[in-house]
Image (cartoon, rainbow, N blue to C red):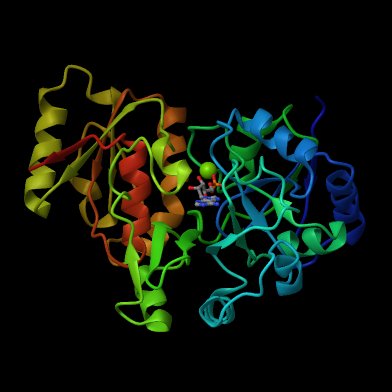
Length: 349
Ligand code: AMP
Ligand code: MG
């Protein structure tokens, strides 16, 4: 199919152009839109026909549900049968618009395909002027998973989207780089203790400030490969670069000497990539070294991760060694994506 690429400036949105995107959504087509997390592949969340096009374009398994994006609390309430409780209201007040997805009991208005036949629906309000305005103009909630081919790193730049989705969607809105750069935090609020099903742009520490230290916990499936997880998306290979990726975990000096040893004993060091921090990037002579930033700014590291994985694909290395980072604050989401990208191939040194 013919994909139209439209460039929009988020500081000064061309409403005429965005209206055309909204019309595509209303007419059950597909539009890639920028959000603060990653670029999303959007379609009318109230239409099975539209939503099926998302699964087709991405090659996404049908049992991996989609997140529905809304531009108002009213639009969210229309997707639920029951009024939301006080805790949800608190979370919405604290984090919306923003990278927090809440899982609610759904109403019959939500097509089964969106929720992969679950009785719940995942909803968030994106913190991005183009995304919000598009939803408002289309006047329907927009289902939007990351706009990558299933299994590839999520797109944080328009050029990534074009690589993956040109010819597969009706329109791509090209805008700035995604500010957060990893997907939203998915939070299950069906039990008294909220459960993080997927770490993301809102941290555990931020949620604890609102819900109390004991009011939220991490799903114990987050760091494992499982067949029947609570959040269906967790079982698939994700974010994988073409090369084999191995995470090297341990004391800083042990990590460095392990990776250096691998480079020195390799017969093809120019086919080795090293994903590291600014603090250690000068250590790995002979390999392709890409830093995700300082270990003191893992929020920026998280924002850079997917682009760095795609860069290694461009270079064409066949082995990537990645330093492990601290798993608190945004480091938790960063390491979650890195572990999935590596298929949990981790060496402790
Ligand atoms: P993506 O759209 O690629 O960011 O993936 C969305 C993720 O949200 C899915 O892979 C699931 O893990 C999670 N999710 C979506 N809907 C639900 C739901 N109803 N219950 C639990 N997790 C969900
Ligand atoms: Mg995704």
